[in-house]
Image 1 (cartoon, rainbow, N blue to C red):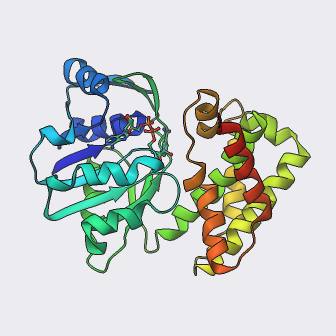
Image 2 (image 1 turned 135 degrees about the vertical axis):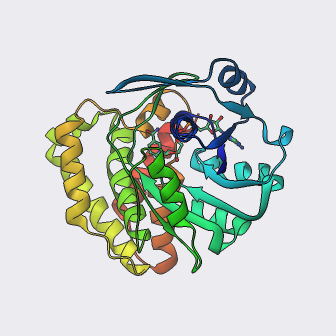
Length: 301
Ligand code: NAD
């Protein structure tokens, strides 16, 4: 499958490397010339518990490439989704499929404008990816991908087959909105709170006040999801939060890491998108809205 990875950061390099190692014809697209040059000259080294694998890859600016590509995997941060998809428009053919595994809400809606509902696939992944340097990705063998089609003639099955050949442990969901909203709930609670407080995950676990705010955010997100006809299980998300407390105590959430590094955060696409959806359907989210406002205040110059 001729595959375009749109956004060659931590996740783009992880998925690009895995798919290329499995024999797919992969091209990574990015706007950063430094990233493109480094990937073309040195490839990607992927480090996991199993050791380090190295793979040569192609990286390009969108304007320098010709299509069509069969599959586009969008892995920019949320605030770049629209501009990134627009930049690869000329590489789409009539059967091209767009996939988003980004965190947050609203990405699939943007992809549907360009690919059409029947050629848009969405989902979540809990594979971690950290960039030690451009072309050096640290990840894990443990992780999964959960995807689903958004249109009647969906293409989730063929994407899952390609991903499974690459060891990406992909499963097709009958209602992919449920895992997407559950991940949003998890991130809205943990990421926003850690970004506001500057605390790592284990510190939040020790604080009864942090736990109370997390419970409030999960309950609010559940009510907003219900207004969209989605049955979000607070018990399941709460279990995932407890597991993060137990197993990733030293973890600094990506929102806190972005904030501390002076980078924009994805707050508007995670908690902010839940608040906005709630506003549209008349569901109040006072705790989450306050946390999102505080994140924005911390981010503003
Ligand atoms: P990242 O910042 O490492 O990578 C994003 C890349 O997109 C950058 O290289 C940037 O230059 C590129 N980009 C920006 N605008 C572009 C454009 N117009 N065209 C092409 N490329 C463009 O981010 P990441 O950590 O890889 O995360 C990507 C998404 O995956 C986010 O939504 C994130 O929340 C989600 N996610 C991340 C992880 C993780 O462990 N890193 C895990 C699960 C989900």
